[in-house]
Image 1 (cartoon, one colour):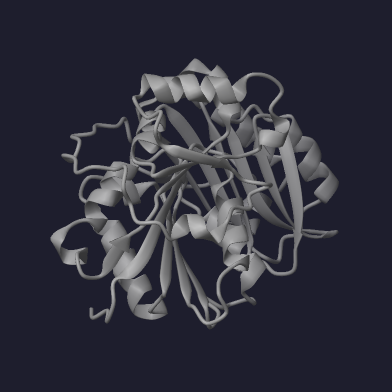
Image 2: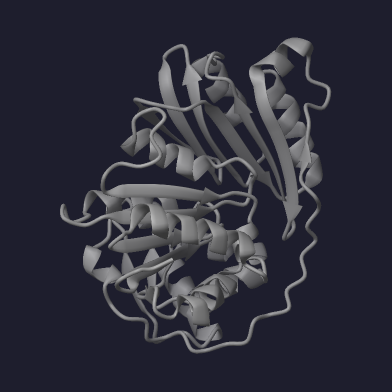
Length: 340
């Protein structure tokens, strides 16, 4: 692969549900007209939700890219594994296809961004990729939860950051920003610059600064409790199976995911969808569904639900993440009622 100039590249990291995809959407609206941008997205689940949502916003049906924006996904959380082979294949294909003037990389909120950076700083990409600011997005309300504060990946996302972006600050009710300052002090990161995102919007200039904070590091010998992906339809009815393209599940880093993709010929009952997902015990849920009332994306995080309307969708998709296997099983049983 030949790239005439090193491609300016930014990593957009942060925990589940912090607003990484929303921020990328806003950045794409600020893209200079004469530039081509590419986005590489990695997701914890096995069905590409974030890429599907971006495709529904920017591309017509059956398109993989426009003239100036190309999106590629790496599902299953495998971008952040030690070998990085899957990421390298996707990255090489994306660079060759898009020939971008800027590359945005969004690792999964449960992945290890140090290993992404290690891949990008390897000898092979030395003259191809030019790393600029790595942004760590944080919803400071998560710091009240010890599970997040003590999670190694959560800490690592701050450790690689050149700039920290506070998201959803309009929902803060107390001393969340002071808690963040104290947490950064604990991690010896008090000097890292930070700013606020206004409903996901930040200044484009934050991308252009060269990396300064993050130093060289050794690749961590990380061991996760990953299980092999299972594909199947469990005990769904025959009618449900006919509507289902694929169902997958995953376990890693103490979290459990269930992912589905349905034929575009199947239309969901929008009111029923909202009723079901509001009652689920999930850490995170994302969906883009073709319903009888139109095409909608559903985003559930910490009990809050956001619904957006879209013009296009390749198919219907849903992914949920829970903190226990029992919650995943119960959630799946509820989802089955949507297609029964």
